[in-house]
Image 1 (cartoon, rainbow, N blue to C red):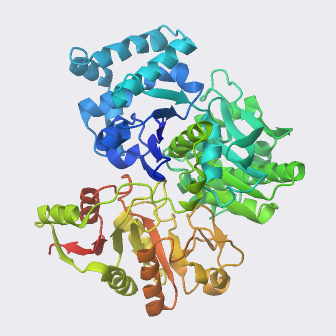
Image 2: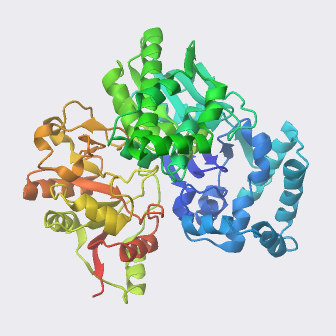
Image 3: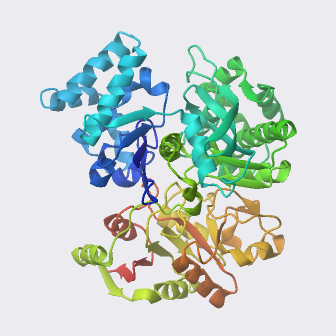
Amino acid sequence: MKILGTKFYGHDNSVFYLDTEKKEIFAVSNERITRIKHDRASVRKTVEAYPFLKEVDWVISGYEKQDNRKYYSDLYWYDFIYQVCQPKYIKELVAIQKKPFLGLQLFSKLFWSSKEYRRWLWDYFLYKKLKLSFDFNKARAKIDLYYQNLIGVSSIQIDHKDHHLCHAMSAYAFSPFSNEKGILSFTIDGIGDDAFSTLYRFDSLNEYECLATSVSDPIENGRHDGTSIGFIYNDFTSAMDLIPNSDEGKVEALAAYAKADPDFLTYMKEMVSFEGLNIKLDVETSKQLSNDKFLRSKRAALGDEVFAATVQTWLEDVIVDYLNKVHQQTGADKICFSGGVAANIIMSLNVYERTPFKNIYVFPAMGDDGIAAGAAILKAVELQEDVTWLKDYYMPYFGASYSKEEIETELTNRSDEVSFEYIGEDWPEKAAESIAEGKIVSLFHGREEYGPRALGNRSIVANPRLPDVTKRINSTVKRRPLYQPFCPSILEDERERLFESSFKHKHMAIAFRMKKEFWEDLPSAIHVDGTARPQFVESQDNPNYYRLLKAVKAQTGYGVIINTSFNLHGRTMVHSSADAVTDFIDCNIDELYIEGFKVERDK
């Protein structure tokens, strides 16, 4: 059985291809194809890039309710923008969207040439202008028609699954607990199918129950349609003049430089209550906290660091209090996390330190791109297909790879910009020598990662023993705020030596505290508070990356390197060999190691 799970509109659209007979997976986020961060266009370009994605038995949507109401009118908007304006990166898209006559430009280019545009324009007029509501079944038929056109087969079988159940299933199915009973799967994000959080208990892949659904209560005349923990963090991000649904990690990083304001924190915590295992947020306080003018006044009064620390501490305390209650009522001690808010690594650290949950699994594609995985898995389970083998794919290298011949062709075509030599299987040891010498190195090999974290196959790496390396990468390579830390990749057999308390974690999705005795030796591997978001590496995870770390340890005394995603700030992680060469040239990276080739700029 071949099933294509999709997150096909809204932010972080993606596809997840599941072949249950061959036990194969292919998954990629739209943004890797378009290079527009958190891409909101449909998955059309992704499916066109990989034609085998059309050869499926089922196509599944990761929404069950929302996509059949008001969101339909937004379905094609970004597709039309890309078709006419062709933005390369997110900054260009933002500039295009600010154009005063963008709608008129699209109309003049597409009205006579695109039947699809004319059909969409009529629906947009009905909903946006006349404020009519779509009939549920009629809107569902429109979504299904989109899928039929996408795949090119009118008889394709289509289904729709609940957003949060998709999150919950993706985390449970890939977790090391997926053959155990009584495992909790906790989801938390902005909103999906009318909820911002759910709690499921799994006894197996086809035996589960929903213990709680935290519904987004309506807010009249508010910035958002309803209440949500994720929305509140989004709004603080926006009030910091950062991009919501993208830059929340910057707020989290800045929060480490201060303590929360006690009065503002108390005000925020008083809005939260628990009804059974459901999280409730006071509507009026939620509306106030979504008011940009109010938040900016608080930011001005408190300062950026305290403002950030307040919302971060609020998030940590709310989730810790909630999960302590969950443990009291369920007795469970193993839990899976998913949803966009689950990307908050310090929140997860607080759960580890302040609750009985010492066995935590965060799905690597924890954001909305991950619901494509859950959608496909849910359908496979429903069809009684065996997918118990999914837990063996514990490293999320689910994306594309490139052959030596393809890469050599790309490098030859760019020979006026770079020089290169083929060094073959010895590249991990050669790269380790450069890292030990203090060079900043980029890596491109094997299949790309699914989810936001680079795990050694599309990475920029450096020596964490050098105190200035964080500043160098932030200022001259990534070109992002200097307060943002970098994450370390660490040999698993170094874990207990370096960290106060931790567990075997491979996906950079939770932080741990490094022992103070190593802060001076590894200054660029930790944040200002002594925490690090590690990837603990064993040989079976990624043999070449493991060899690199072993070689670094032989030369520096530590099997530790800084690892950040291979991209320039404002771009997505590189997808193709062409992307890799482009970003290598545009960034101040010393060397690129790409499938056995060592690449340097042409001097």
